[in-house]
Amino acid sequence: MKHINHKRKLIPLVILAAAALIASISLSGSNQFTGVVEATILPHISEVPGKIVKLPVDLGTHVAKGDVIAIIDKTDLEYSLKQLQLTLDQTRIALSEQESQSGSKASNSIAIARSNYNSAVSASQKATLDYQNAQELFTQGAITKDVLEKSKVAADTASNGVVSAKAQLDNAASGTPAESTRLELEKLESQQEEMLQNLDKYTIKAASNGVVMSKSYLPGDMISPGYNLVDLAADGENYFVFYLPVEDLYSMEYDQTYDVVSNGTSYRATVKYIDVKSNYTPKDMQTPANKNRKSIKVKLLLPKDCPLKPGQEAEVKI
Image 1: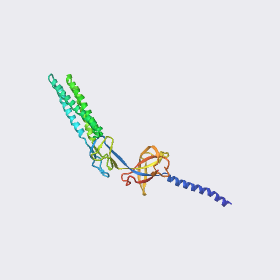
Image 2: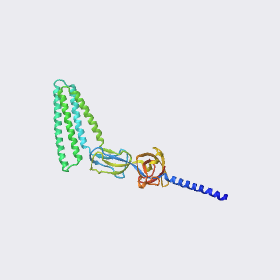
Image 3: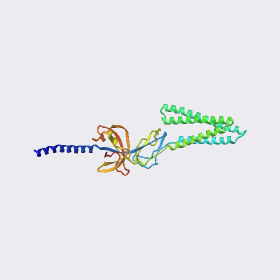
Image 4: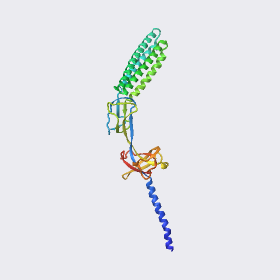
C-alpha cells in the first residue's frame, strides 16, 4: 500500500513537470519574430520647375555623395540674374552720383532715373503681353503649365521692376534721393543673393553613397517642384523590420541591441525606430507571437558589414 501511494504522489509531480516543460517551450517560441531587411531609401526631390537637361544615372548605378543626379534647365533664371545685375550696376552708379552731386548734377540723376523707369515700363509691357499669349497657348494645349508659370513669373518680375524704377525716379526728383537709393540697392542685393542660392537648386546631387533604385523621369521631361526624380538606397543603412505586439512594447527601448538571425548566422542590430501607431501584422511577417494581434513596427539598424540584402527574411528573439 505504501508503494502504491508513493506512485500516486509521483503522478501529479510528473504532470506538473511536463506542463512546465510545455509552457517553457511555448514561451521560448512566443518571442521569436520574422522580419524582412529594408534599405534606407533617400528621395531626391526637385525644388524648382523646368526641363531636365541631364540625368546621368541609371537603375542600379552606384553613386557617391555629391555626384550629380540631375540638371534642370536654368536658362531663364540666369537671364533674370543678368538683368538684375544690370539694374544693380545702374543703381550703384545712381547712388554714387546722388552722394556726390550738387546743383546741376541733380537734374542728371533725374534723367538717369527717368530713363531706367521708361525701360522698366517697356520691359513690363512686353512681359505682360508674353504672359497673355502664353495663357492663350495653354488654353489651346500648345504649352505646358510649367511654361505658363515661367511666363507669369517673368511678368511679375518685370512689374516689380517698374515699381522699383518708379521709386528711384521719385527719390531723384525729391532732392534727397541718396538714402532711399541706398535702401533700394540693399533690396536688390538681397534679391541677387536669393537668386544665386536658387541657382544651386537646378543641380540635384546625391545625398549619400548608394545605389539608384528608381527613376521617375527621363532627359527632356518637364518637372514641377515637389516631384521626386530618383530614389537612392543608401550604403550601409539597411534595417531589419518586424512587428512587435503592443503589449510587449515595454520591453524595448531605443539603442537596445538584438541578434538578427539568418541561415544560422546572427548579426547584432540596434533599435533605431519604433512606430507610434499600432496595426495588424502583415501576413508575410506573422508568427505565433504576433498573429492577429495589434502590433508596432520596429526597425533595427544592421551593422555596415552585414551581408543581408533588402527583401531578405530573417528572425529575431525579443
